[in-house]
Amino acid sequence: MFSGLPAGEFRLTARKTGWRSGAYGLATPVEGIGIFDDVLKLAAGERGRAVVPVWRNAIIRGRVTDESGEPLPGARVRAMYWTAVRGRARYV
Image 1 (cartoon, rainbow, N blue to C red):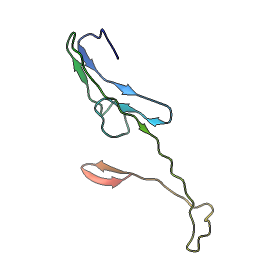
Image 2: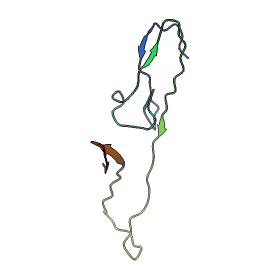
Image 3: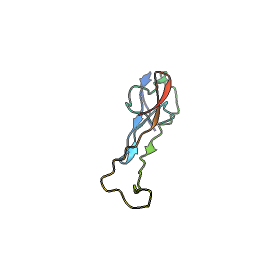
Image 4: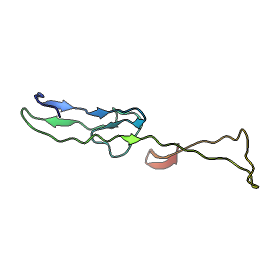
């Protein structure tokens, strides 16, 4: 809780080791915090409520095998996610 803040615009962010950073106004984790975050506007003496979400980092684990179930040493694996690029869904 903050008190005694002057009137103005505030950007709120949160960080925690092992978690994705968050910012006021974000509903999902994104790269580039500071670009998509909203501004909390308060008048003199006004009270406000702000939620700043953070997201736990994910871990992907597994084994790459061939058709017979044998491990494939040195296999290259790449994790990708969906995002919107110029209004179109893409893997990045």
